[in-house]
Image 1 (cartoon, rainbow, N blue to C red):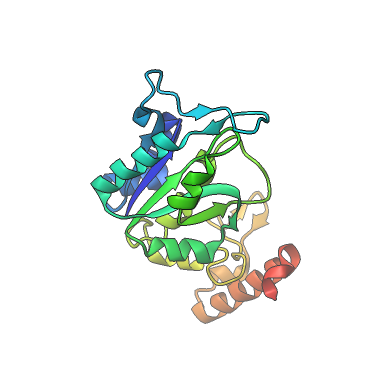
Image 2 (cartoon, rainbow, N blue to C red; image 1 turned 90 degrees about the horizontal axis):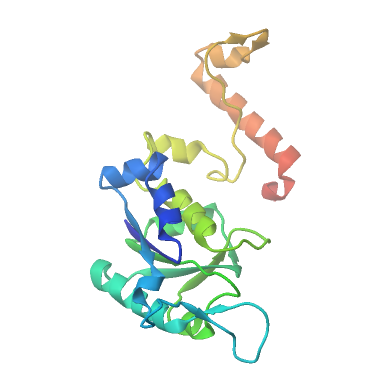
Length: 224
C-alpha cells in the first residue's frame, strides 16, 4: 500500500511514521507512507496556505490552490488514490472501515486546520470524509495517523502474526479477552488456571466467554 498525508506539519507526521510498527513496515517495503508539505505547493512567495473566509467570521480557511496542486503532484507519482479528508462531519471510523481501506492500493489523507478547507476542495477532490469521534482537534494529523495505523496493521506482513489482527477488539464484533504473560504468579496475583492447562478447546471457550462478558459490561451496544 502507498499512503500520502497532506499536511501543514510534515515533521509531526514523519515522526510517527518512522516509529514502531509503521516504521518497521516502511523499512520492510510493505507500506510506502510519507508526508507531503502543502505549503510547498503554494504559488504565494510567502508559501501562504490559508486566508480569511469570504463573508467574514473568525479564523482562517485553507486555500484551494496549494491543496489542488499537492493532490495533482502526489497522484502523478503514486497513481490514482482514494482521497480522505479528516473531519468532525465525516462518518465515524470503525474496524469495518479500516478493513475496507486496507484492501485499497493508494490512499491520500488531507489534514485540515484552522476553520477547515475551502469547500471546493471537498466538492471536487475528496472521496470520503472520516471522523475519529465526536470532538474537535486542532488539526487532522492525529486523526490521519490513527486511521492509517489502524488500516496498515491489517495489511498482510505488517504485524508479526496475521492472527494478531484477527483476535483483537472489534475484529469479531466483540472486545478482546484478557491477556497474561510471565510470571504465572506475580506477587500473589495469579494467571487463570485455564490458560496454563494446555487444553486449547477449553482455552478458546474461556476466551470467548470473557470477550462476551467484557463487551456486555463495557460496550453493550456492540452485542446488538
